[in-house]
Image (cartoon, rainbow, N blue to C red; front, side, top):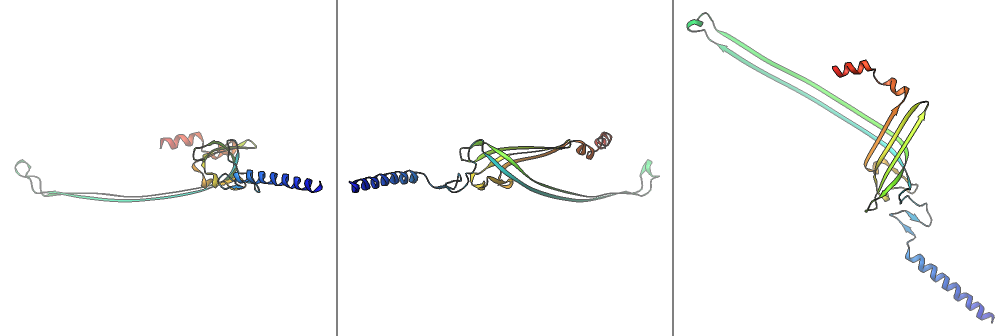
Length: 196
């Protein structure tokens, strides 16, 4: 009797284990594309999930233009005939010279971290993300906005992504407040610059 109970328990345990192994075999333990794992944190992959964007943008542009033009004309004539015999020999030299140089240098550097939300999962499993952050310190407002498209595999295990991995990225950084207004030229300066 005792042997039958032990055998029955062993059969039940074996059946439960076989069912669990079969269920586990139908789903992979790790999905590298979506980032799901039994042993790690779950990466953002649905609409509404949050992603931390590490903005590290640097841009630099240089342009140099140099032009030079030289045009010289000579016109001459001999003595006049008939009614114009009072004219002697004459000569006219015309010379036009132009030299111009121009140089433009522009650099930009933006570093920030901002949380964005997945607003669309596209048919190819890429994500459309949108993030906004407003900081207000003593009446000085700073607004950062970012939109773009990223791939699932570019999102790290801690749900962060570098801004350089976001395609069609549009990053906007704006400020307003007393300090920002004092840094801008006055209305008279703007009018003079507009006129000249």
